Image (cartoon, rainbow, N blue to C red; front, top):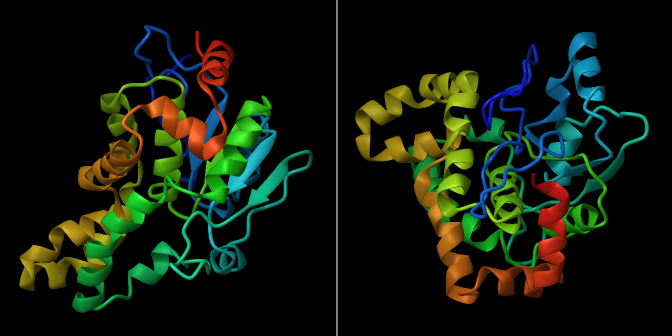
Length: 262
């Protein structure tokens, strides 16, 4: 049975594992099911039943958007016949990888939580540009190497922006992009509880830190708005963005949509 767009798969332990299939596009079509998958760390797929569910998806390519440090802590399980891209989507200004392990954020003091929350919007705004991790992902998509899965540690920030870019390339509206992005807040219930437990006492004493806590456990509309505003500021026409950043011209976009929409 076809589920509503953004419905998580019924894994036993993996949160926020969902697809882009079913989302509408502005020309009246919908993204085909079974082509684009998004999730958090694949080490969450632990049981034999979950592993079989995963293998049944027929995924050809996995784009792991995490830093090498995150991958070392929670390595992806190996699946036969799948090609991997392991490229960090977040880099520091000096070009080194940025560790963005959500478990480490559970140990921040109030000053650290405030600083990271304030920086998060800037991190989001940089993600769409000169990003080799996303370029590798789009190369596979344009080569029709689908189904494709992209993931990070929590499946919300780096993965959320990747999902947004794919939906924009397929012609989805900004409202649809935002709806898919914000679904993380209902698709990661355990993570939200973990962050509430870790920072509840801090937020009680510092109510102004509540948005920062929400951004660590889930996602906030303001951060996706930062992505879209940054793209608009540099490329007022979205087709120009895909041409400049990924070498995907208007005709390429049209062919991609014909392949991936119905």
